Amino acid sequence: MCGIALLVSGIRICLSSLNLDSISSSSKSHLVFSVDDLKAALQRRGPDSLGTMKLLLPLHSNSSNSTNYRVSSFNEESHVLDNGSDMPESFAEFVFLGATLQLRGVSPVCQPLMDSSRNVLVYNGEIFGGIEVGIHKNDTESLMQSLGNCCSCRSQEHRTTCDFNGQAKGSIVDVLSVIKGPWAIIYWQESSKTLWFGRDAFGRRSLLVHWPTMEDPRFLLSSVSPTSSRLQDSSFEVENGSSGIKFWEELSCGIYSMSVDVKKSDGSFHSEIKKHEWTNAMLKELIKWERVSIEPKPAELNFSHSRTSSAELDINSSSSVLAQNVLTALRESMLRRISLYNIYQALKETVPVAVLFSGGLDSMIIAALLDQCLDPNYEIDLLNVSFDGESAPDRVSAKIGLKELRRVAPLRRWRLVHIDADLSKLTWETKRVLSLINPANTYMVLILFHDLIDC
Image 1: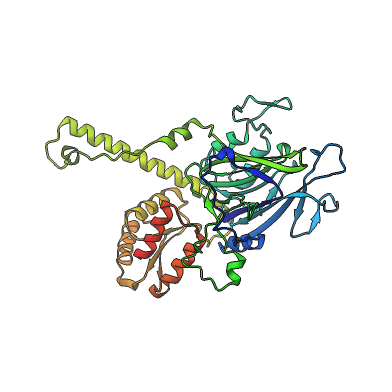
Image 2 (image 1 turned 90 degrees about the horizontal axis):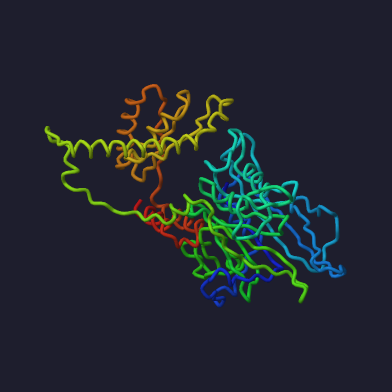
């Protein structure tokens, strides 16, 4: 998956329950982002496909009950309303965008997805546990099925015993809380007229938000910040991928819902956005876990003495067990990520996996573990980037690492791929990368930026 986006208009949205800081709109008033801007931003990520779906919630003034509204779907590629009805004078509009780059499953799956119950999903993530994904299945399709089985209960106190139409069903929060893997999601649940959105507890997939303001009352979500058409048409130069004008902010990790209702007092759509607590106890514990730096004692580091005390033997044994536990976890993680390499079996010459390879400790461990997990009939490419040809330190260490891998895994076909980069293009590439990760204000982005500069 490459990215997802959403544009919501025609709804008065209340944000009071989120306890957000005061939203200043003075710096946002002269920026306008369109669906085409969002499409262009997602297209720059190089997806296999880019899909759009529009949902309309019409208000019918001639109805005796103003809450009687229905959802129509509009596919921008076919330009046909599902029910063939005329466009109402007043309606709320949801425009979903999904840019797909196939990583799982035998056949490509284009997003957005709509099921038989008229639920809509765009998903940017991978599922390695918590929800069963068959060996030939697609993550998004499997998630769509799980979400479709959820009840429409909006309660914060929902548990799996909640009875909906005589059946015990889990909630949307329950399903999202058990996913193992990085994800960002936008999901429309038709039965409850509720929009669900959010990102995993560790923020491993980006999702930016524009909260409604007086100048721009729309609600927007996007994996990446686009460049406004107004900026593109002006002489304003976007430096380092950022205009310096704050329109987007990164959505805090978590699960959010926006239930849509009609107020009889004014006959318009209203909604309140709420944030929900994770229901997975282990996940809650991991979020609260604080990493502690421990300085080992000199005696704990001295294993080279010919005479070793029983205490030192215990420490050595404990360290070995911990190291094996880490390697086992890494191996299991890698197995989950390459478990579908057999889809390439029909193409005998295809190399299903490659390693970004510097010859350092990290890439050497990854390559060695990959050899243990991947069918020995497949070749493994080791991709090595150099700004200084054959004399670059990473190129030298990569060649040494290749010899070691061939020694410990002689039956594997290893191929070191030399990628020679032009240092003069680094500045342009840096700006392009920063524009793709705009607003670029998180700690991990800061590390990436310094890595680019250090190159």
